[in-house]
Image (tube, rainbow, N blue to C red; front, side, top):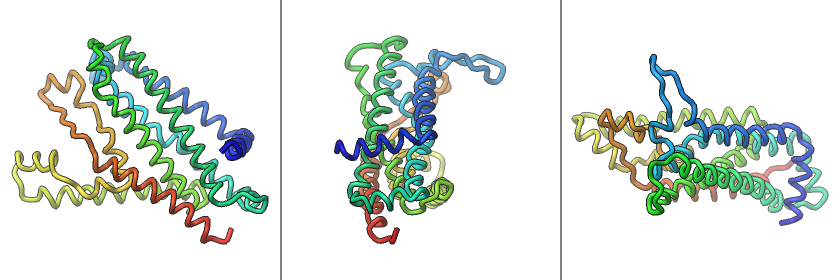
Length: 281
C-alpha cells in the first residue's frame, strides 16, 4: 500500500491541474457549508437559510450533505484528469513495463478515490457539528446524532460516483468523452425514470397518485446516478417556509439504493480491471 500511495503522490504532485483543482474544491466545499450565514434577495424579499432552519439538528445533516454533494462533479474532474492523463501520456504502459500490475494500478486509483472521499467526508462531518452546535435551536444529544446516517450516505454516494468516473476513464481514456458519457447517462436515466413514473400513475387520481409516488418501488432508482441521488434527498421541504406552507417532508431510508450503490461500486471496479486486462495498451 505504501508503494502505491507514493506512486500516486509523485504522479499527482507534478500535475498542476490536480493541485489547483484539489485546493479549489476543498476551499469551495468549506465556503459552501457556511452559505446559510448569507442573506439572499429573492422575489423582493430577504431570505436567510440559517433562519429557515438549515443549521438545526437533526436536519443539518441532510442539508449539508445534499449541498456539498452538488460539488461532486468538481472533485470528479480531478479523478478523471488524473486517470486520463495516465493513458494520454502513456504513463500506464510505461508503469506496466516497469513492473506495475493491473491490479496495483486499480488499487492505486482506489486509494486516491478513497482518500479524497474520506477527507471530504471528515470535513463535512466536522463543519456540520460546528455549525449545528453554533446555530441550532436544539442541541440535545439524541437530536444531534439522530440523522448522522446522512454522513455515511454521503461517503457511499461520493465513492460510488468516483468509481463510476474511474470506470468511464479507463473505458474511454479521454476526459471530454468521459464527461459527455456522464451527461448522456444523466439524460437517459432521467428519461427512463420519468417514463416509469408516468406508466405507474397513468390514469390515477391525485391522492392515489401521490401515494404511489411516495411509497411505491421504482426500478429506475437502482440505476447508477439515480441510486446515488436517492441516498440524500432534497431537503428544501424541511425549510421553515415550506412547513408554514403546509408542505410535508417524508423520508424512508433508501436501503435499496444503498445496496444498489455498493453493487455498482463492485461492477465499476471489476469492470475497470476487466478492461485493463482485455485491451492491448
